Length: 322
Image 1 (spheres, rainbow, N blue to C red):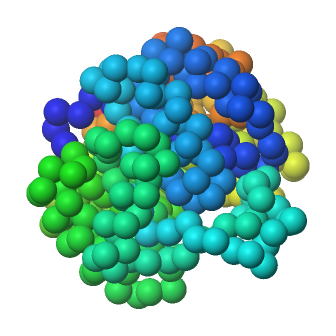
Image 2: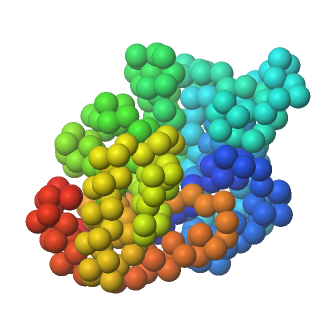
């Protein structure tokens, strides 16, 4: 894992699977071209994203690039299988505007993990996967999900079929269990180490420090709450409505950022990189301009005094700077 250069900013390709709204193939390509032109070389996807559509679109784009030029991760745990009952409907229950004639089937067994990786490689059209994450193990309904999935992934890594392995989740319990397993290289921490919400600091980050596990920090805008300077009550927070007390605190954070002439999204991106365990930040986008803006934001300087001011106001925990 130590030789993987993710870069400071990566692209999370859920939107390529028609998350929330349909994208044409041309729109998907335009997003990926913008990411590439902005210098992004780390791309993350999953079978879950649009029932394989994200993997197919991302793979088609990356096949035009030299394999040494980019880092690619996908996820295991959900297999995509025919769903005749869903013909004629859309997968809106899972927030993806794609035909529901396929469905997700959980399989965290040794054979299921191998099949998941093989099928992802086929959809991507790319043999070498740099990182494979067990995806949302806490949602599988199997309390022993990691106990079977991680040894299976470790076998694939040791056989050279994947470069590094990890766990991707919003659950601090699942993330901590993964870090403490002694088997993984990385965690994808989704929305749990952000300017608005830092529960990963209690157990997840210390577990990573003890076990030499790196963090890929994802969902750092908490589904949009931190993505604009003046978040409103209509903002999404972890795919749902924002709680009033969270909105109040984030507005106070935005006010302090404004005092330092730093936009809230810029502060959110930089905060997500502050811990030494964090190797990269992953952002999604459904429009090219969003990616270009985030690439520019992460290149902006942010004064250390901003963090001190937020700490003194009790708006973020006190942490040593990176």
